[in-house]
Image 1 (cartoon, rainbow, N blue to C red):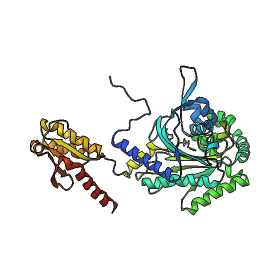
Image 2: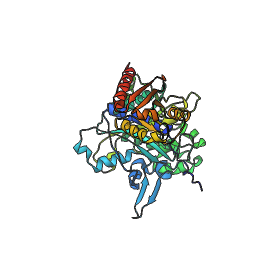
Image 3: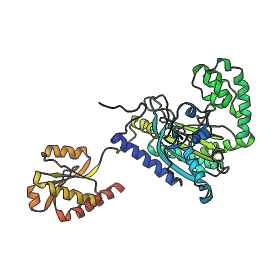
Image 4: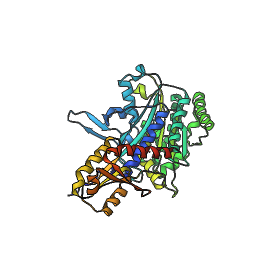
Length: 431
Ligand code: HAM
């Protein structure tokens, strides 16, 4: 009996996996350029980590977590995002005491949310993200946004929309909260049951409600911009001015509040619309946080970070044919002609692999036509042909599969010859 995938999950197959690898490698390289180092945290965490950080008023915590009791009766959750785990790790390992500030880390791995699966929305998906913790300058916020923007450009995106907003500091949000309670208090009887809960726990969450009738009410709600303290306003303007200085276009979107509770000050999302007019939702998003580290038992350090969704990035890159060179490639395809040649073929393949060449060898006794077809499927640059005549002379026929040029090379000289050929190729690549 065939067993199906759990709903909302997906396999990443061959060329697609190569594309993921390429995207991830590029993200890591850009993070490295900007001075971030990798941090790996567990996929399972104590449930309390997320209720305390992502927040018990968020949809993620209220409805979307994979939470279970382990055999020791502890409440465990599959991480719905990676920021919380990174902060826990910074606190547990006292990185703020041993590292210079800001602590700059990047991470990559699966996250789990029990959402309704749809285009660009999975229950298991992969995030690449960065966090910069321990500096209060809004320049740090701008740097993270610029890094994200640079990464998307390097992936080949021609146009990206950067939506940006501020949620202000604690004082701004306190005043805003009072204003929201007053406004929504007058409309609550017409609003959805979730919004009733949000009204009590965190009225800011109402701004994110997806119920059409509620969206209409939200449209006329007070705006955060009217409640910002002077300092919060200044900090936001500084970020915007820095982005403008570096020619990064943004749209201030006052309806952007983000679905996680830990933000203050700047929040942002990167969006992209494919040539066919399709959007998979935000490709990546993030923002500044002031209380996350202290909430998790650490010192009062602010931070800023962002995370990209690898599935969404792959989806739109693939859609607009922006991904190149993700086909399988090998350097040599070794072809034994007849069973006699099998052992020599294998020996030669091992020698090539030992010298660092991607090599595939055919284990079966096949005709030329099949062998060349397979070499092509493997994206091979050269064919190494070994038949009885070649074996007797301890040599191979080496064929360049692009130019069809063919030479004979002694077994003993093959690695030197390969080094020569590939040195010339590298040289060409550089011009
Ligand atoms: P988020 O907006 O919840 O933020 O997720 C970041 C990105 O993950 C989204 O923009 C999207 O590309 C991807 N993503 C989210 N949910 C799904 C899903 N169900 N299927 C596919 N992709 C998805 C965070 O997670 C924050 N931790 C970002 C951050 C880092 N803020 C500060 N530091």
